[in-house]
Length: 424
Ligand code: DSN
Image (cartoon, rainbow, N blue to C red; front, side, top):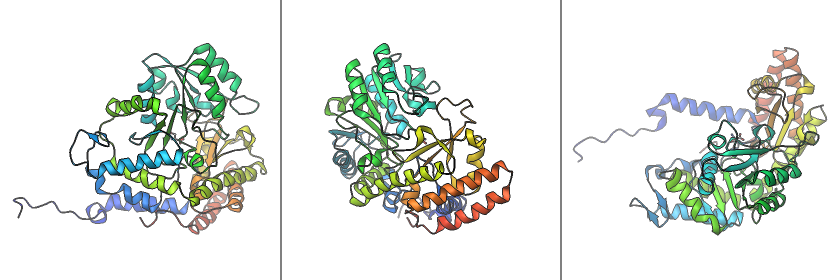
C-alpha cells in the first residue's frame, strides 16, 4: 500500500462541474450556430480523442531517436508517424510537427534565416497578410526590417509587379506569401521566380488553405516555396498546432530553430492528433470535402453578390470571402455582432484601403470550412446568404425582433446537421 493515499481521480463532471458545464455550453453553442469564421473548423472525434490522452504527461525535448529525456519508446513512434504522414500528404522532403501554433512556426523561420534588423517582405495586414509577416505591432515587425506589398485597389488582388519591384529595391532575405484574408489563389510560381531573382528564401504560409492544398482544391507550393508553414486546425481539421515543411537543404536550420531555439518539450498529445488529422486528410473523403469547401464558398459569394453585397476582388477561389459593407452603410463590427445574435458567427475585418480603424473596420470575413464539415451544401449557402442579408437590414432598421426571428430559424437549421466530434 502506498504510504500516502493517492489523490482522488474523478472525471471532469465530478471534479469541476463549473468547467464541465462551460465545455458543454460551448459544445451546444457550436452545434446550434452557423460558424463562418474562415479560420475555424470542427475536429473529428478521433482528433479530439487523441488530444485528450496520457501523451500530455510526457516531456520529449529533441526529435525522434535523439531526445534529452528517457521513456520515449512510444512518443518517438507517434512523432515519426506524424512526420511521415505530413511528408507523404504534402509531398515534401522534411516536416517538423512540433511548433505550438502558427505564430511560433513563423518565428522559427525568422530564427533560422534572419539576424535582427534584416529585411522581411510580407503582405500588409490590412491587405490580407498575417501579423507575423512583419506587421508593426508584432515582434516580427519590431525586431526585423519589414517591407510590405498589398493588393491593387481596382482588383483587390496581389499586384505581382509591385511585389517584384519592391523585392528588387529592398532585397529581403525572406519573402512570405499567404495570409489570413486572401480570397484568391496564391501564385506560388510567380513568388518563387521573384524570390530566386533576389536571392530570398520563399516562405509559403498556407495556414488557411492547407486542407485545400492537401485535398487538391488549391495549387500546392511544393516545388516553388523553400519553406512551408501551416497551422493544423483550420481547413486541415486537426488539433490546434502547426508544422513547418521544407526542402532537405533547410531541414537542419529549421529543426534547430524550433528546438532548442524557441521551444522546449513538444506537445505530444497534439502531435498524436496531428498524425490522426493527416491520416484523415489523405482519404478520398477529405479530397471531396476540400472541393466542397470551395464550391460552398463560391455559392455563398453568389448568394451575397445577388443581394447587393460588395466582395473584395469580386468573389473567391478558395474557402474565404471578404465583404466590404460600405455600400450597406453598416460598419463591420456592428454587422458581426448582430449576426452573432442571430447565430451566424463570423469576424469583422479590415478591407484593403479601409478608411475605418482595425478595431471598427468596414468589412466582415466569412469562410466555409466549418459549415462544410457539418455537411451543408451549396443550396444551404444561398439560404445563409439570405439570412445574412435579413440581419443586416434588420440591424440597420433597429429591428431586434427581425434579428431574433432569423436566430430561431438559424438554430433550428443548424441542429439538423450532425456535428463532428460531438460524442468525443
Ligand atoms: N487567427 C487566424 C485567423 O483567423 O486567420 C490567423 O492567425
